[in-house]
Image 1 (cartoon, rainbow, N blue to C red):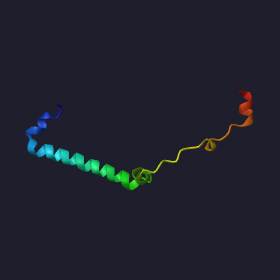
Image 2 (image 1 turned 30 degrees about the horizontal axis):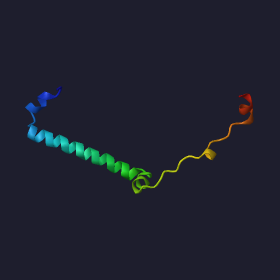
Image 3 (image 1 turned 180 degrees about the vertical axis):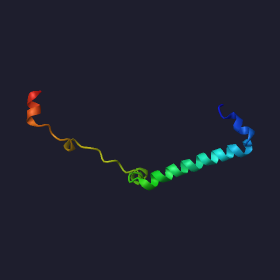
Image 4 (image 1 turned 90 degrees about the vertical axis):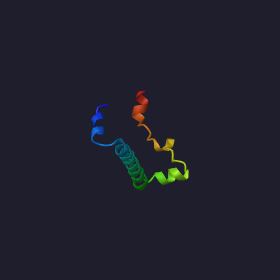
Length: 69
């Protein structure tokens, strides 16, 4: 372990809960940011289907390109 000497300065009974608390707070902050800043999340959670692209949305090739092939 690279940082094994940290336990000479910080008690494990203090450092481990502090580390786990920092991980939990960071995870909560990331999830809150996703919920707050995306428009698709609410529809995803409510179970609405995503709008799929249709074949009409694909532009047609010009006739010159089709004739070459």
